[in-house]
Image 1 (spheres, rainbow, N blue to C red):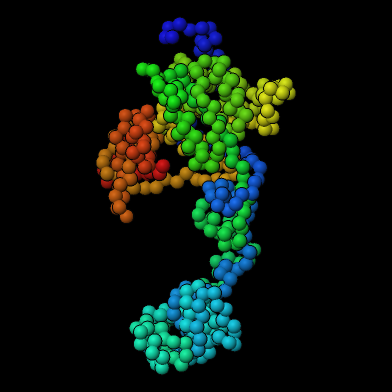
Image 2: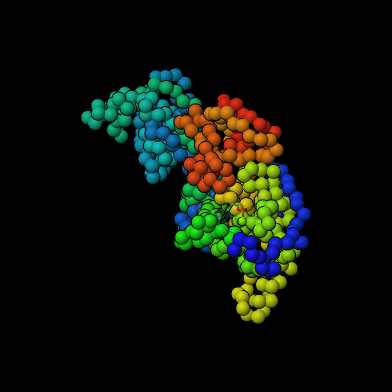
Length: 464
Ligand code: AMP
Ligand code: MG
């Protein structure tokens, strides 16, 4: 139907919010300010590896000193540094400690003029205060036939051996003193930290086979648009498949949330409202499409009917200018409550303010605005401590020309190798060009006052 409109589908701007277009920085700060007010969900305990990419709900502390003993960081000889004031020096080898051995003081100690063979990871014997690398030694004298074989490296046998040391060491060299990394009881990982492989290593090193993490926030994803069809359908000539629900679900998952895809709302007020209300049962609602200036862009109007509060209705960025951020209070959830009472709907979480983002429908705009604004809110709902948005810098390979007035996040490719990185804009046809974004690995950030950036200039980047 192109010309025919029923009265119920007739768009009206009676409850549309008054426009509040803010700078990129203000928009980001507004989201961050609201994000600090949200609470993460309940705590659950999972097996350590299932905790990967989850957010810690407990503090992980050192169960003993790290390292638990003075730990050699080289293969060589434990010595008294003072014995090597003059080199070459000849020391008597009185023992050997390999990783896992415990050098009992008195049984295996280093006295003046003595050395003990030591392997990486082994405890330093009493009396020693440094380790000489085996590469700086040679076997001075030994009766055992194996010595010849090892002589060039300075390894001999355990008995009746002297080692010659070519280079001196300072006290404290080539070992990590007990407790230098952490003292018993010291905080290693705080609550709110997302577990990566290093975090998993820390938990493992203190013996935690299970960890407490926050439940993932449930994030509703609602696409809108009469032209949008499900991905299994064969699109008509003017229809497009619903890629945004999937890119958003993937981004939600990457950010630490659990996506709840609510399908596609048509550009019709009643159905859109019903789906928005369903989405408000989740911890956060993400809408895509329907937030621009078009006659059938109804998202803000319907949210307005639900007494939403809007913190911004646009940001001075491109792509993604029409992005909307707001929340609905308990009033908007009243219908849900009455249905709970009537037993037609399962109990929703306690009615408090629910945040929503209206992301523009153009797929690249959807992805960029998610990253800039929705992600920090999901991270906060997931219990994560605030993550700052960090821009990197790289040299521009080819000149950029744009219009002034908006901060631009342009899909780009970071090229080169090692320290010689250069960045170049991806060829793209604008905010609908998913293929260009898939080829890109970052965005070049162009300040609103720049019309032209020369090749060779340093530019800011946001990795994606
Ligand atoms: P809108 O923001 O609703 O004006 O939509 C802007 C552009 O994005 C239009 O070309 C839409 O067809 C497209 N679009 C909207 N929603 C989706 C979606 N879920 N998946 C892919 N493209 C979409
Ligand atoms: Mg639309």
